[in-house]
Length: 328
Ligand SMILES: Nc1nc2c(ncn2[C@@H]2O[C@H](COP(=O)(O)OP(=O)(O)OP(=O)(O)O)[C@@H](O)[C@H]2O)c(=O)[nH]1
Ligand SMILES: [Mg+2]
Image (cartoon, rainbow, N blue to C red):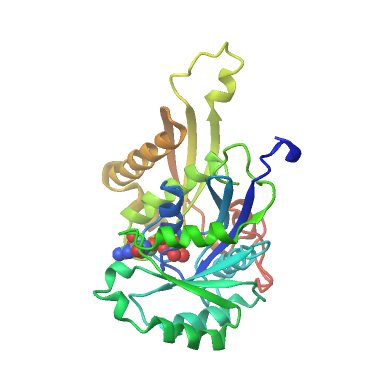
């Protein structure tokens, strides 16, 4: 829709969701969206790419930017994840710094200050996982917040929320909408993300791999889609008949070592079958139709240091990237 055709009451706000790994960024986004769009697991560093998640309240568009958890690391993959998080602040009207109430609070604030390495605009603290604390109201969070302002002067507000119970989510949504500025919607065609279904298909496969695989294996797993045939697009040429299969997807799970390949495939292929069945259900819910999913496992030694693979995963070089990396 042309900008001049948008409703005159339209407002918009872009909000970067920041914080350490596992603090509940993607869970909070899904709660606010009312949709399991972003992948959530109990493992740290689940989110690997920054992306927009969009919802509207009346005429106000709220764009939440999910980001990987900021943390210290000298590994190339982690440097690129941190870069994604830092880039997530670009163009944001407000940053939300999520702090996990079930962990020690103040180190999370000082670590964020060290890791963000950027000038930030207005920032609010969102204390998460309040359901895990018996009496969250009794915590001296106002005092903590005042102390946090000495480290991060850009802090102006704080909230205490839970993505499990939904506590205070309305207050947070209301405050974000109140801060939105009059102007056109960036996503005015009902889009909920700037990433496509192909991206979310790889995410849903990786989510199940993270859930089902133990120990360090998830961190050495990546997923690439080799082929994604969207039959709905073809169907337009086929006199509007609804296709019996909505998408044919062929994807590869990359692992670092042959022993990991054996685990991901599982005895008689049981593990790969389970990853496939679970992720296919989630992809089918997304595309609202039947999906054929073909999964392979490939050993790609040190893929997490390989510039070619990392770029294919949507992770370009970071400012502090290591100088040497493998070429194609
Ligand atoms: N009890 C409780 N658990 C939560 C809450 N929010 C998130 N979790 C759990 O915390 C874990 C991490 O949640 P995520 O949403 O993936 O965290 P994240 O910050 O996106 O993590 P990364 O993408 O790895 O940076 C999952 O096991 C969630 O179920 C909450 O409000 N209450
Ligand atoms: Mg996440």
